[in-house]
Length: 155
Ligand SMILES: CC(C)(COP(=O)(O)OP(=O)(O)OC[C@H]1O[C@@H](n2cnc3c(N)ncnc32)[C@H](O)[C@@H]1OP(=O)(O)O)[C@@H](O)C(=O)NCCC(=O)NCCS
Image 1 (cartoon, rainbow, N blue to C red):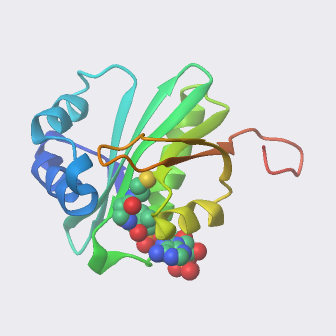
Image 2: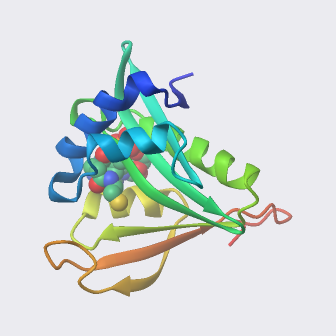
């Protein structure tokens, strides 16, 4: 098992992943700590490990029937090994357990790698939000259904 719930010991590693992968949009170590400690209602943090180190993380918010994937990132040296897919599977499990029937996210429209990842994992574009990021970039809003339809994709 390479993915597990985050603990307070993981906070520095998660904060480093934020800075390394999200730059100006990174969350502070203090904010990460509040979330990992459970002080932010609705928020769950997950981490992925490789060789005994935390090399990826995901953050989800679940409120009633809608879950939001707020973060997913993997250290560049460990990408394309399925870690983000495992993190996403864990987020889906958390979302379903919390009663959500759909998972939404925003991704920069210039982040082709992440958009390809999401498209390969059943997300479809449902909207665009202009000036969503600090630098004025547009966000693509994507959605994945979490239903258990009979043989369907749950969209
Ligand atoms: C997006 C990201 C999380 C993917 O992590 P990952 O661990 O490499 O993803 P996986 O190994 O589980 O990839 C699963 C599939 O997604 C697709 N995919 C992932 N990264 C891709 C890329 N850069 N280009 C094209 N397809 C990609 C592929 O179909 C891949 O399967 P394959 O490796 O067999 O071809 C990672 O690139 C990352 O951390 N990026 C920086 C942070 C970021 O942009 N996060 C999203 C913010 S909204």
